[in-house]
Length: 330
Image (cartoon, rainbow, N blue to C red; front, side, top):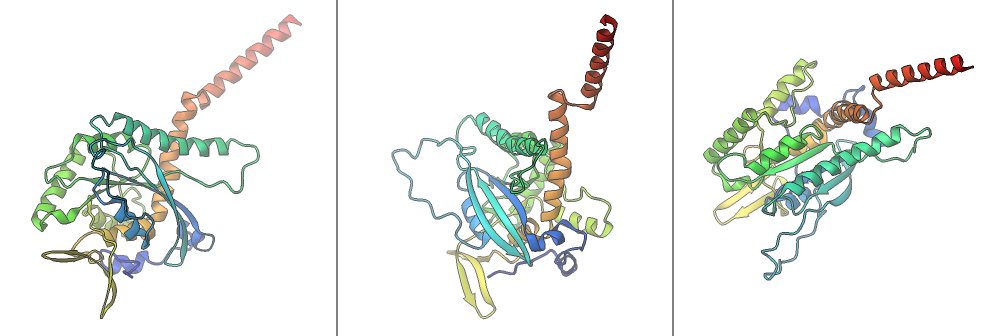
């Protein structure tokens, strides 16, 4: 199969392939880690093939041919969950992938945004309830979404209103990594121009995509993460076919005019993205979800629910006043 740890350069590969003794990933190498990915994008952008290529197995079977009589009717969005047990660089991963078929296929996609937000918030609420229990469930499984891979249609222009609204609404709840689906529809020059247009829109609209440079305490990692930022949005080409040659097994997508080796970083960013998602940055994505996104949500939720620090102080004052009034009556 394809190399399990491709990287931007040999320095990054050698450094990131070894977990630090104090790191989340190092502590999880024996007991395994729970990791949840959500895939969002319109039909036809390669989500199914992306998942199968990411997991290096047929997680989702090829769909049946659509019925011509109902092909013009958009199905409502739904959540399909797939669980995969994996091992990457000696670390066992209990991976759950949530696919969202039906997203963006209708004329009015307002309900899709709400469904996605409600789903992500519901996973936060589950943790909030579990934390409040006197006796916690030792077998509780964390279902918080650690990363949302968002597939951008290769329009050749820039972000659409659909893309902007989704990132704007969900960016405070989940780590969003934008990718260009079907990137093989571009020439090299067209891909560079489209990527520049997308990044221009992200900056102009201040869209909260995942910032790989959020932790500035490690100067060496910061340099590497800045290199990764140059690849956003990642260009993705995937395939189900594996061929054997004199160098081993390779994944190749064939066309009438030639082939693309999807694990060759000179041809697309899939190998780099896979390495980021399942190896080098898995701990960062989990930690940022737990320590930043969830904590911000938890704070707002408790404040709105009347359980903030100020509310507790007000409750104490009211209790003191009630006790004082009761003593006077006695």
